[in-house]
Image (cartoon, rainbow, N blue to C red; front, top):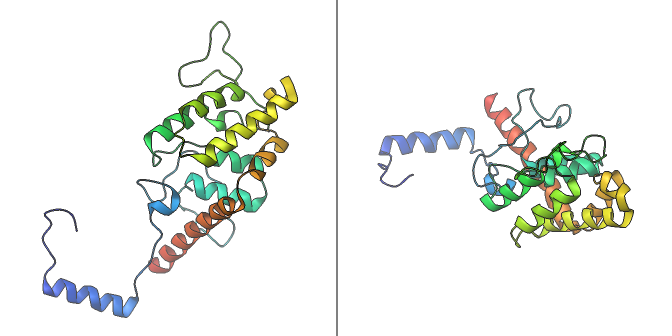
Length: 212
């Protein structure tokens, strides 16, 4: 009930109770489970298929945390890291702004870093035109201290690139770099991302059962 809303009448309550008694009550995971402030299954960009027999063809897009959990299950370190570092409207404003500067999806591709500076000009204010190595530095400066996992990933990616010199900067999202960065994330945090994907599957399954 919202502020100022009229309480339901006796008959309405009775119908609701009868419906719960007969059909049960769907228990969904809410936005907080997906690390989002609003929009239960909201996401930007294309989403990978959750797998045959799990989601209907018109399934909602995966939120970044659930998408990361799926790629962890698939064993794709690069895609998992890119999902974890993706900006989403449901994130806190400072986090969203910092990750928008970084925009890992622009550079992931085949694992080679892209985004070379624009001819005749520098990088734009939102990180466009910067190589991922440099954009990650800007994102680190802007990310809140509370975003420990995201900051850890960016630091480890940059550390790996520094050790590899210019080649490491060009291949910022190499499979080796992403695997090493993920390995530094505590196991409990990686397991939680898998659990987030499981929650997404649960929500889809519950919705499918209700839709008959």
